[in-house]
Image (cartoon, rainbow, N blue to C red):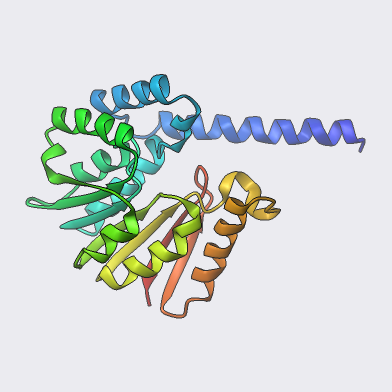
Length: 223
């Protein structure tokens, strides 16, 4: 097989993968209108940064986790424009609370506008500032922790949140495949993701599952 044929095969595989993800989204419960608007506004105002959104499939999976755990308290590290926070807040038990952390004032202001319009926004508490400082001020337990922040501190976030996890709780970590760069890491962020993945894999306190969903999602629970 020639190099050109191999290249065409690779493009065909990529195209099929995109089509399958679109098919999966089309055959999953659609986003409510407010979340659709949030996604559209994020794409309009944030440009390429909109790729940071968790997206319909991953957001719905997070909802499933919150509902399945019957979560009363959820912690999110890295809120961005509030998409995943609102998705998870909808599935919280009555009286449930979600604490979300971010450092970007523009993203926080954006998210707050949508929280104010949602019947579930009152369940969300925003903590502005460096997440590690916020984590040191929190008390557990949390039933679900969602890590979706800067990769350089991912191990630090993990180590700070594991003691806050309830006995039946889960940690979900986004971007653990880092656009495929984990296979051949060439920059600091990719190497940080690889280091985090190896750190969790070697941690005898937990078991983990790495899902090939979107940009990679890792689920972690205590043994």
